[in-house]
Length: 314
Image (cartoon, rainbow, N blue to C red; front, side):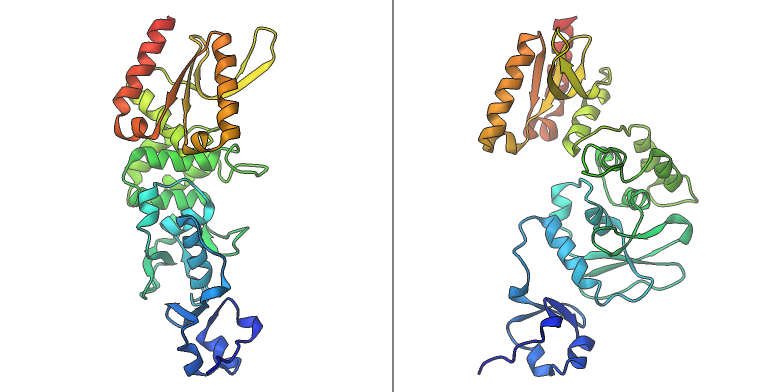
């Protein structure tokens, strides 16, 4: 038997109330072409584009879940962080099988399949509507403060804050948050994770372009080495621009560059990297190229290489 086509205005996701109002019967809602990810919410299986990244899948689920959320409920914690596009550990994204939703005290948080409910003190959060997704979320600074109870590694708390105060990572006219806003979000009444947040705040820097840049910088500094300049522009003797390096010690002509996977699999990028490194070498720069394995599994090796390069140059 052919399925009755759904009204076009219900696609790609709709609630039970929407279906009833459109005259769609319960038997049609049990058809195999529909998914039922949340209570009272249905999604047409072929009505959405394929999802390639865990971040996209989380954003997709949030847009669908919003159909059933009551007034005053907002996305929080990790889900809000994903919506703001800040860098998070890959493992925590893959394990994010429940969306974080919250309400202000004294209301009771939602309790339903696929949702993790939170109750937040009003003085701990400022709310807004996300300019791109149109969903209720905490401001970027409030979202970062919520991550103090979620992100276990201190470098990741710094990486998120770096991304918020940096304009290099976003094609926007201004950063998502200011340092003053981060400070205001942290120095409120007692909150979970406040000590970690305050310690992270001291290490926040602007001009950072990625999570791995933050991790590389902190590994170097925590090893007792001088703090490098971030995204430093190198010029030749005539003042002509050569390259912008991730981290730099201009006084010793030592640069530290993180090599992401795209550097290996993008032929154009690979050729560009070779030219850059040759030009830097011609100007007397020593480039330390950092891999994911070294940064996350053997950071002591990275620190030793930087230390040796500085000693050799000095």
